[in-house]
Image (cartoon, rainbow, N blue to C red; front, side, top):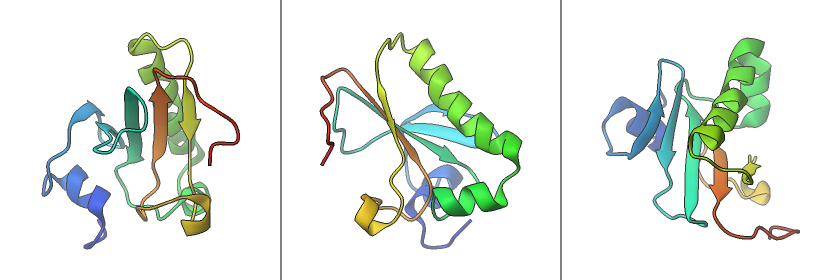
Length: 114
């Protein structure tokens, strides 16, 4: 756990989060500032600053599991169409320095996204 990381604090229960999925390695919470009717954040429990750091350090099975949870949640929520997004670094749109995958659905998505 990184002491000043918002998502580490949510995972640890120090800050409330609306959990929709949780196991020992991955959690999923509802985004507090949703950009679509469905907007979840899928987060590895162990701190990784961004996707590059996660892929470098995590076992390949955990990398696969993270994206497997994204797909599983999409299916469980009955989503036929959705967008999964990983922002890396400030110029890439990352606002919290802990890897997370956005799962967005329930409205028409546009390209380019922003």
